[in-house]
Length: 424
Image (tube, rainbow, N blue to C red; front, top):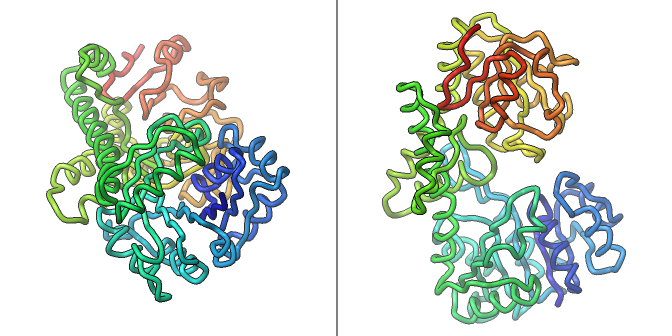
C-alpha cells in the first residue's frame, strides 16, 4: 500500500515509521527541509522517542520510507493520505487550523480520484466535515464521490509512540459509511491492531475530546483535593491511596497544572463548540491557577520570597521528553518573578538558548547555593543530583520525588497537597 503521511513531527514520523516497518511504502511530507533531509539519511530527528532511531534507519535502508517537501507529488502516488499536522489554540482559545489548512491545500493540489484522507489530529467536533473536507474540494473533486474522508485521533504518548501504536484500539469515524469502512480496513492492515469503528467522524472527534477533558477534570479534582489537604495538614498521597483502593475511584496526582500539546488544549476545543462546556472551563481554571497556588505555599513555608534565589529544575512539560509546549515551568517563572524572586532554570534536554527562550536565566554549574529548588519535570538525569548542595527546601511540583530520600539528606520537602518537613 502507498501511504503519504503529511507532517512528520513528534507523532507523524513515528507513525510513518511504524507503517513502513510492516512493509508498506510510505512517503513522509513536511515543510521542514532539514527534517526531511535527516529522515532520508536514516537519521532520527527525535532522539528522545524510544525505539524510533533504530527502526527509522531500518525502514529507510529497506526503501520503505522516504521524506519529501513536495507534498502534492507524494499525494499523487498515494492511495491513502494521513494528516498528522499539529493543531494548537490561538490567543482566544480557539483551534488554530492555519497549518492544517495549508496542508489540505497542498494535498488537494495532488490528490487523485479514489484517495482516502484520514485526519489524525485532534479537532473541535464537526471540523472534519464542515471545514477540512470542504477545503479538500477546492480543485473540483467532491467528498463522498471522488474521494473519502475519515477522522481517527492519535492516542499516543510522546516518548513511547512506537510502543503505543497498537496498545489501544484505533478509533475511526468516516464522513460516509464507505469512508469509515475504508479507514478501519486501512488501520487493520498497516498497524495490525484492534480498530473501533464509530458511526461518524463527529463521534470519533468527540471521543478524543472526551479523553482529554476527563484527564484535565480529573487532575483539577486532584488539585482541589490537594488544597483541602493543605488546609487540614494531611498528606494527599495518603488520601488518594485510600480513595483509589475503591475500584470506581481513579483520581490522578495533583501538581502545578497541566502542560503539553494535549490536555490543556483539548478542553478548549469543547469550550469553543456547540453544547455545554462549563465543567471543562472550570477544570481549566483550577489547573491554570496551580502555579500561583504553589508559589503561595512556598512563601507560607519559607517566608517572604522577595530577593530569594530559586532554581526550577526540568522545564519541559513532562520528564524525559524535550517538548516545552504549554509547559507550567513558564507559569511558575511568571508567578515567582511577580513575587520578586531571582529565578534560574535548568534542563538537561534543552540548550542554553532553549532555556532562555522560555524566559529563564540558565542555571550556573554546578547547581548549588539556592534558597529553594522546584522540581518541575523529574528527568532521569536528576537521579544522581546531590540535593544537599542545591537548596535547603526542595519543592516537588509533580509529587514525583522520593520524599524520604530528600528528608534523609537533612533537607525540607514540600509537595502539592503534602505537609512540609518540619524545620529543625
